[in-house]
Length: 220
Image (tube, rainbow, N blue to C red; front, top):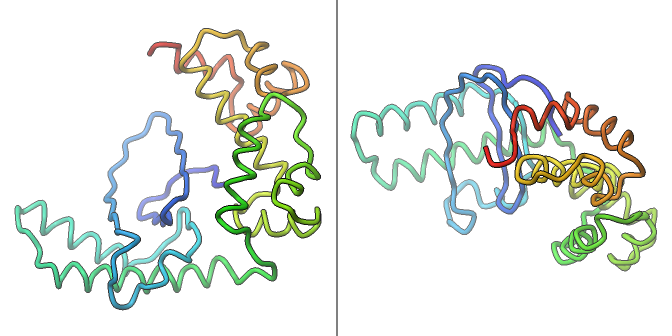
């Protein structure tokens, strides 16, 4: 998770299959996005699919490369395929370097995609109830300690923090898209009380559910 300002020149890398949610207020934002086919075979960046997410990092080389591509296309020029492939390869190599600097190799293995999918499906199906660490470990067919370490190595969050983040994310959707009361939303998402929901939401989003709904009233 990253909670803070996006600085000028900030770089974010999101690997294929990763979910990313951004929330901005009173923003004047200009950015360029380079989308890379995860199945593309481009010399120099074969390992992009194994890299972890980066948020709000700095790299002047990538900024120059992406900026030059943006400027070329803004002028109506269609870059040659070879040029784009070389540019992507260089970007991939730079991202790999940043990954090694900011995400040192974990001492623990990661969950398989299938195991993580089972755990996420379980969380989704039991969102309104008490989700225990032992239950999640059982879904992944692993010992509790090993599961907790591998889950954090995979998602960047401890299992409990991940469940809370999922609940708050669902709460945002319900606050924006329905007229359900805050107490009902708290109950539906497994919070012990409305006050617990309000405290948690404010800690993670910087405002209470009521203030959030004022910014995004249902049907807006």
